[in-house]
Image 1 (cartoon, rainbow, N blue to C red):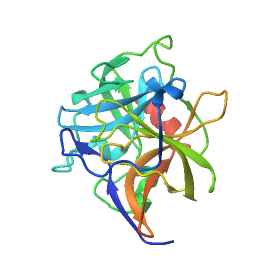
Image 2: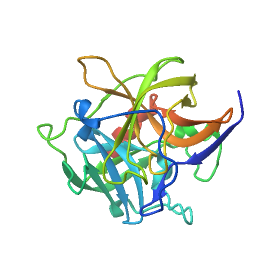
Image 3: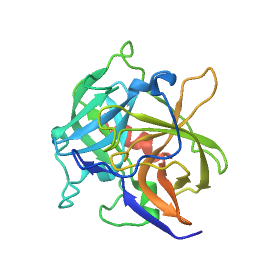
Length: 236
């Protein structure tokens, strides 16, 4: 495989804008139930993206649970999930009360092989009604060559998500996915989605970091695997 240079895609809130996310942007409103995707406000200082996967649980990247300044674990109760944030209003806002990180994740190891364990499940202080937001359905990781979409918040778009469509899965391994989507800082934890006409989107992976491969911008994503169900049980 060509050499990868990866950078964690979490970010301090309020950083100056960097490179714009590449890909083919599309209105998020074109995605049924897009409000299940939201911004994680981490102690008022940092942000990531997360997805509602159960009425009281969200899925994000494990490294979002660590302070990017000193590497220490973040107090889960300092985190707020703002579902469907668009402008100054969110569809629902909940505090986090518990975080369960993949047992194989070791913070601080910068390697593509770490990507496969870079997931965490957060439990909310109270459920979000299905009449307000329906959780995203989960599905198996895509195969190489398949098309996927990524919906993310970022330092350029802190208050409204951006949707990149028709990205290609360049590499599909048990430990990681590499897609042609180009994400910006803040996109850690963003859902990688499979879209089918007439069907609700399905969450198939989680963005871990942005990277470069063969001189081009790509994104590294964590397959969900069987570990996700275990994390959800522990979070519950």
